[in-house]
Length: 509
Image (cartoon, rainbow, N blue to C red; front, side, top):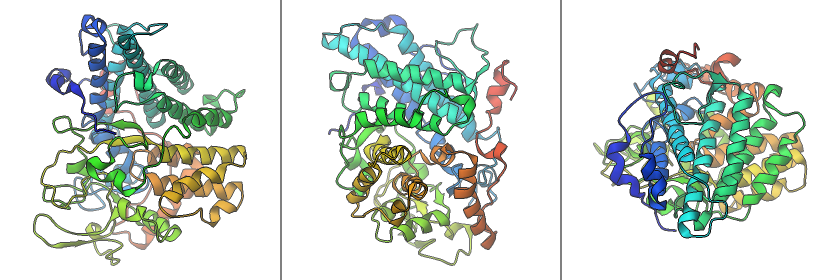
């Protein structure tokens, strides 16, 4: 499939005029939004542009969720265990004044503000026939999908948050937080509306999601509710069955790309047959992944390498699948530095772990993997949902339902990299559950899912599977490893941004 360059680049200059924590005022005049399919499409691209910005998937949101996932540390603000992010995010003790928290909040609500404007400005065609009518319906459907997706991020990260579903006015500027159950109810309403309206190939363009992206999102919502606290659930519903019914709609609508490695090799991995929901990146409206997430001086361009993997996670992956080609794609520990030609060696190439700088493998897949690259912008897209994730979801769901299909789906994922399911998959339902949750990590590490997957099964799972194993390792080398907090009130949600508390009279904490 062709790489899709959004036409909204020509209006970038007018899209950001404020840094308010509240959603923006309508970013295109309503009469323009109403006037044609092309203008409606431009408004939709404006929503996606908000998601690409630095505050959101361009940088800070991925930084926040990766470093606070329990799987990583960072060299940002200092190449040592006591820097401002390791002592807060990496140690699972985040504080509300962190810039990454505030910026992520801003990015999400600015995106929601744009979805609200599209939803409230356009009228659905009940029986769309013309190309323009199909496009406009698709625009509205994608706006509902994106609003649901963004509230899904919010409610999992923060719990109760303000639920804004209309453009902000002076009367609604200050808005109280809504209960978690109400937020999930709105998410489900929005996704179901998206399923009705998204038109796929008859809609906007290559590079934007098809209706199956909404199916996958709704399945993820039901999976989350299946293991949520009772006050978030409807006790009459079988959430695992609902999750299966949605996920199976997207099964075989996509395919695994032939090469796992190629998914993360620059533009070669853009918009493949595996992509279900992908953010487009072009020079001029680029994701900040090359500069921030490429290992330090891996390229000729100055890069920062903010993500390092806690060693127990690398070790577990390597011990589980010693011949896994995903290891070389996901982690890197030695290279020739682009600034001075010296050789970088960190764990596991260098097992001494004599300093913070050489004690961890770097996350490799997100940034530039071209050692000759000399620019810090990128045309490499970011895949939020891909088919391998859907297959792992179906495997996990099938194990919970005990429908006999659980091994089928994970086998498809492993077959791509020449592997077969390990012995843990044959040990019964509990053993399978443990194995599939780790399989998400091996397949998707660093792609924005780890924070959520690690917490989705509750505090005890997070504590016993991620935190305690890490803290055992930390005791062996306290000079380089951070210690994870264990207090449930600290580790399960992100604290509300201080700036939002100060700006919103209806919120006190």
